[in-house]
Image 1 (cartoon, rainbow, N blue to C red):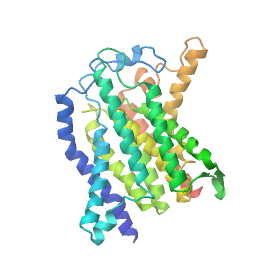
Image 2 (cartoon, one colour):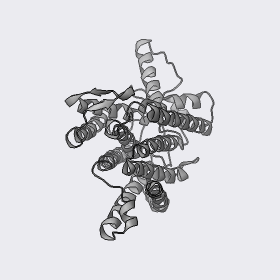
Image 3 (tube, helix red, strand yellow):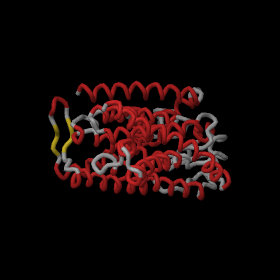
Image 4 (cartoon, rainbow, N blue to C red):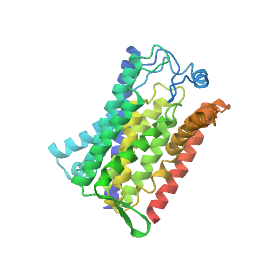
Length: 358
């Protein structure tokens, strides 16, 4: 039985990788043919100011490299999931039935958040490409994106509360914190917090490697909890991310951008809750550990903005988020990426261990 579960968990990941590799040429051709990149390098900071250091560092990267590379990830996940479900329904065998991991209590919700978040992200990417003739991005404002993420979070939180009967979060030593109806806004708040870490995208290979390690950690936690369908779903995301990474290593063929980060960050938060009281564990408690690179990235932005506001424009970092600070002090982009990957793996292992012994 354990061998069958292992095959069920890993086969979809391999399938998603193969599908992602196969999808890349036509998607790449489309993105380059329609010039789906920013027409001028540079960006505007969260506080509305220009970013001269960032613009100098990325003047040769932002243009001529398409955005929307994240489509490789969520399309691969969707096709892998639906293909295995379709085969199990119309060509039912012991093997096809076993490999189907689409289930109401484990994978409907994370699949919904991945696809819905990614589609909204795709719209934002398109608007940014179309409106990027100058330094002012043409995408949706941060406020609008946060509203969208909040709505998705409220929908997902309501599913947990009304459909799955979850209204508490797990605490160590077998305790739990009962939230009642407050669970829904709390869920949405966590989703927004994790989404804010999506700004980790910005260096070739950085976001893909970090997301792959985080979802691998949660796949292991779900497998330990015998949530085999959820473990398979996490690994199918990992397989799709690896196919994206194959083409995202320097020099990147395309960038993940919002259509990748929005869906992945929201889904990561959902998976953390799925491995919490629903799975009899502490998936939410270990989220800050497993997602530490995202947490640090968000905090560096908050620290920078707060410092400039309350210290008469003085900055803590040369540029935020912090991974760009390392670039600004002279680290090559590949060194930043590789060291982030190392930290991400260590955090994933630590979070996995805490989840098992907590």
